[in-house]
Length: 179
Image (cartoon, rainbow, N blue to C red; front, side, top):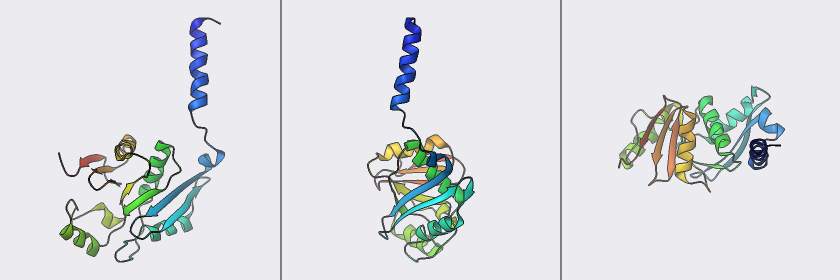
């Protein structure tokens, strides 16, 4: 074997060793583990199996991602659930995402606008199309870059509040507060 062939095989071997292998389940199911910081609830939901959505699990996610102030439940955009799952896959993690805010009723959104800054009047949260998250054990900037790399929707970066916002609107990015 010549030098070039030896180096090529070495690179392929090293890549095979350090690349995590996916289990068969990774190809046939989609699962999210979430923790809601305001309610203290945890959920482990397998929402897609063998190419089919599991509607009972999506319903459980709708309940979990409800407005935590009013307990109002709203159907979450399945594209948002997929976006969260894609971030999980991009980071190659099984860790629980922390949920800070998901669906918001008009009443809750108005309250937050009056008592904090950076809350949009016509927020995607009102339509079940946004979630504010962080991921313990990961830098917030790493989470931000993972979401941005997917180009699936809006990404807001809130480093002082230690979360990112993701939504299923057009791809865009903002930072709050602005530098």
